[in-house]
Image 1 (tube, protein in one colour):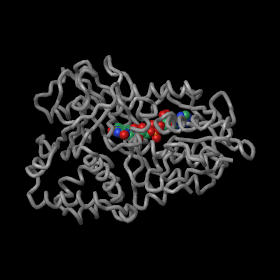
Image 2 (image 1 turned 135 degrees about the vertical axis):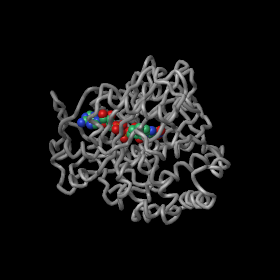
Image 3 (image 1 turned 90 degrees about the vertical axis):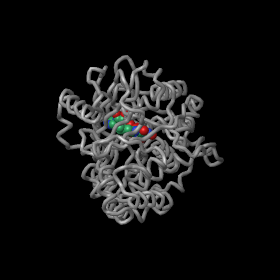
Image 4 (image 1 turned 180 degrees about the horizontal axis):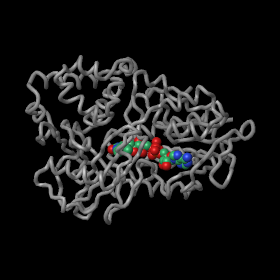
Length: 461
Ligand SMILES: Cc1cc2nc3c(=O)[nH]c(=O)nc-3n(C[C@H](O)[C@H](O)[C@H](O)COP(=O)(O)OP(=O)(O)OC[C@H]3O[C@@H](n4cnc5c(N)ncnc54)[C@H](O)[C@@H]3O)c2cc1C
């Protein structure tokens, strides 16, 4: 079993002597990677650099998965909001490998809080101290909770405690009801009740790392041109190195072919490979590979996901200067991300780009609502929050729906995680369900890809 412990992750920065030997062995071996999200792309790069002959299968018509781009108005920008933190060393390393590490812009951003019908800034210590909805003692407890969480190193213990219990004990009932509960519900919905304290610990750790990465300020970054630039560079580099990228290729089944090779069935063709790595969600894997052992299938189908409806709104005017606005009141969406408060307006032709995410369970009936219904609901929500907002300023409104974004971090989650190595020789599974002590972000995704690469080298015949 691969070890799910960040400390033990070995990063293939340089080719070690061992690696050199395995390179000889992998030279010319055929590997198929299913899924061309950031995980599959990173893995493809590592494998081709190691001498593998790589084929990348992607069901969508474009690469990128959750980080893919689409057209909104005349722009091509990220389908879902994406930011890189100064502390995201793995994301930055991959950008470096693609030769675009000097294309990041780093910006100090502001954070807003919409609470009790008011929008307030919460971007520095002074603003925290004057934050209206809490008395000084509550703020003190809240501050202590964050400080304490940032110092905890043993996340495994936190996995055994419910997040509600842990935060109430540390911050008090008032802070939990007023601040933590709305924030947890914004991301996890009602599943926050079953979630462990490791979730909030990982979120605080990431926020702290951002604040303590050299500049002592929360620096957020983006590649000029957004993920479009990063993905097109990925495509160029992989193609130059000989990776076959098959878009619009939905894999239907995976089976062992003989003792060592693995058979992949697309709609109209069957191919075999020395190694196959699946990067799709756990539930998709359980459908694709019915020949796995019952206990493997149970684990895979037992991973519960949280989904999202994420609207992109292109506007003539900005609505605030906050990159993130956290919302503690009841609104149709669970947060506001104003991308144009981070990204230079020239990228958007002078317009403003605002994301309205709503995290919901995969079976939430909202997934069945029409674009028009969601648009009306969301725009009315923005109108009620910002009295100056004029719906005539909406240049374009687009909606993304994804039923499986990240796993619900239930109690003792790390014991319920699918293994990278499967019972079918040379078949590997790697996806975000294997992130046990972090939140879903590209930095974690790239790390998981590096782990998968190590696993393939170690365990393939
Ligand atoms: C709303 C939102 C906001 C985010 N914000 C940030 C952020 O600010 N910063 C950050 O770092 N990260 C952010 N992330 C997280 C980031 O997008 C993910 O960490 C990353 O994209 C996950 O990549 P992946 O390759 O693991 O998964 P995916 O992107 O889901 O890739 C899996 C791929 O497999 C393909 N696939 C599935 N089934 C099949 C099949 N049968 N055959 C062939 N292909 C198949 C899918 O089409 C998909 O392309 C955000 C994500 C979301 C949804």
